[in-house]
Length: 88
Image 1 (cartoon, rainbow, N blue to C red):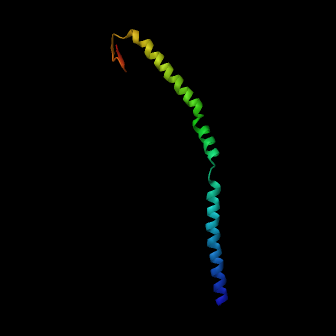
Image 2: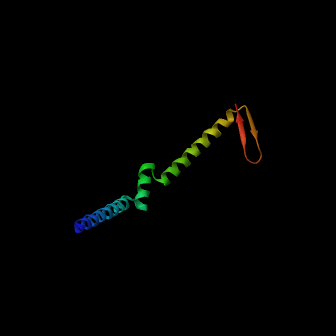
Image 3: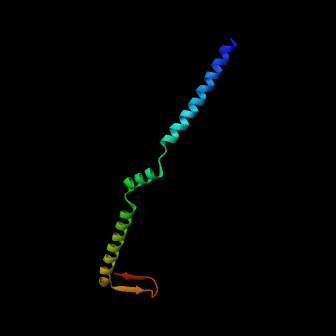
């Protein structure tokens, strides 16, 4: 009877260690490498170089629209160092 209890205890201990070990390996295998994270970010959000180029083009277009609207303004208030405001 004592041997049976010892065998059950040892098998239970082995089962617990196996479960902990399996979960550890499973979580480690699910982790992404740095390159995989970069690739997924590029795929989901787009290439950072392309995004920055598009933002730059959008800023240039907005600046051109603003400059074409200045001649139609009825009043232009200018700060000599930084800002100017065109009012219609």
